[in-house]
Amino acid sequence: MAASAGAGNATRGNAQGAAGAVGSGKGGSGGGTLSSALFYVFLFLFVLVSVAPLLWVFKMSIVQKSEVTATPPTILPQSFTGQSYSTIFSDASFQKALINSIIIAGVTTVVCLFFGAIAAYAIARLRFNFKNLVMTLILAISFFPAVAIIAPLFIQFRAIGLINTYWSAIIADTVFALPLTIWILVSFFKELPPDLEEAAKIDGATTLQAFRKVIVPLAAPGVFTTAILTFIFAWNEFLFAATFLYEESVQPVTVRIPNFATVYTVDYGAQAAAAVVVTVPLVILVLIFQRRIVSGLTAGAVKG
Image 1 (spheres, rainbow, N blue to C red):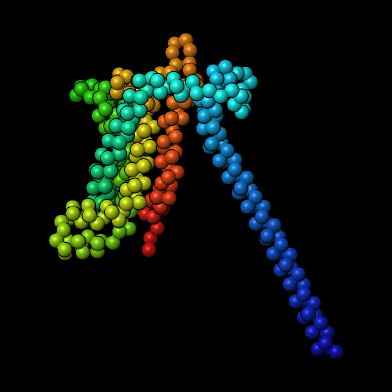
Image 2 (cartoon, rainbow, N blue to C red):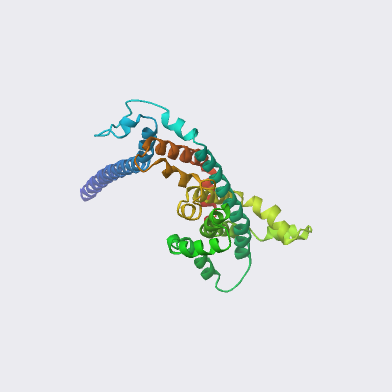
């Protein structure tokens, strides 16, 4: 009898435990579903807030001027026109500004990659005291307010005749883009085993040859990522260009866009169209190479 009662109690206890486990599993599943729902809601809102300004600028570029200034504004375009794009592409100064931006951003990217790769390789491979302090100081340059040095730079550039030349913008952009280049590339070079250089040297290669023919190709994701980020930074830069390049023949597109406004009128449609033309190539570039960019930003942070 006692044994039967004990067995019955054990059976009921097991059943209650199983029911509790099922209940807790349901509760956990419900909590997981709620968390997933909140995550997707937050993700949707984040994407909406990020994309909405771009869509609004694009909408302004394809509607008539009367709709751009309508009150209250229309959410969806009511009248389509390509007049704004015709205005900017028929403007010879805007076309020249696009070429200027490509030159400034391209040269800045090449200069940063050349000097940044050499400096990053030296920091990653050489052993010296206060290496972390050096890296911190290099990165701190990127956070230095540009407006604090723009007046001294203007005086120096004017004294040596660099005002209204590409080099004034290229030098200033390089000062702020080079630290980020070094910081990113150092992490990649550290992950590459030194045995690679040793093997190349055994085969007769010099240090520079081993760096150029072995290390740089293996660090291609990091180099590619750094190149894109540097190009985007130089392409979007406005402060230095507006200060040092006040002649129309050398102004980049970021400085040229506000010039579609006159003393009496502002062509918002042309400004929006110009903004779209300037932004779309960068968006396409990032979309095409997004996997390389992601792998480049993450590969250097993974060990093993």
